Image (cartoon, rainbow, N blue to C red; front, side):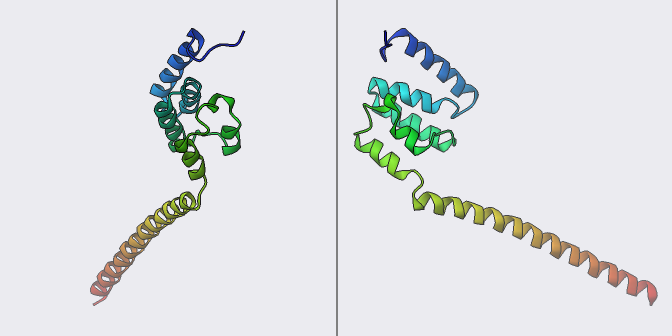
Length: 133
């Protein structure tokens, strides 16, 4: 006998997934999305998929597309848009931008340290000249 989305087993699983989410954000978001998808709860499914993506716990796009738990939402416009948004050039640009920003801030810190070191060297040389004179 196959369990129905609104039976006690799914409700128990949902409760456990919500507990897992409260402990570590994103850890059970995809599983919650599947439960919401089975139940046809579009808004909750979309929110959970987004949370899973945002916490880097989303399965590969192919696995999502082949997941029978999401059958009821796969034809929805929001779901198609969500799938299309995965690994788009914009996402890659955002990743590249974040990497560049991180490198720039590290580079800026290094330059500040080098300037600070240079200032110390100048002070040392000036002090040395004063002592010699």
